[in-house]
Image 1 (cartoon, one colour):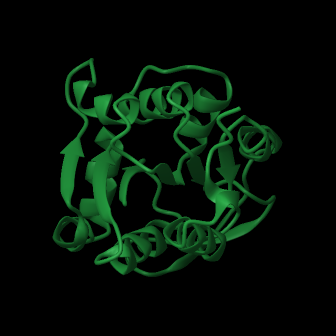
Image 2 (cartoon, rainbow, N blue to C red):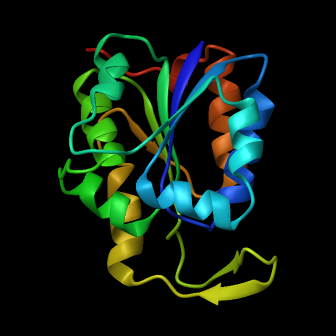
Length: 186
């Protein structure tokens, strides 16, 4: 199986997401796609090289068109994972805006009936997050961010998970071929 995995500029859940990509090595080829902000944030967290070592390929956002995502329409990928997903990316995807690498991947994945799993960063009113230096900081997502994180999971073919553990369960089910993780083609 080959997965498309898109990283956004979120630091929250970032270490865990990279760890899940690492754990898939051997059972799935993971092509990683990085938003502009993701490239910066991975570097700040010291995770760029670690991610590059376990990815089948890494494509960083550049320019204004995204021919690199054509594999979604061509049936190259068994699923698209967007994790971690910033509130900005979730808002765009929930409202049908496709103007960046990751939001275009979300739109193309949906149009191509590729199963999509999103791990939003804004999942509860109060959260503890890890800063690049390891310090724990409190974050208080807005109601609209939490609402959009919920709403995105109600879209056809999209699963919104609330934690890295739930994301790991979703990818494990996908690797086992569970029909629960396949897109209903109608």
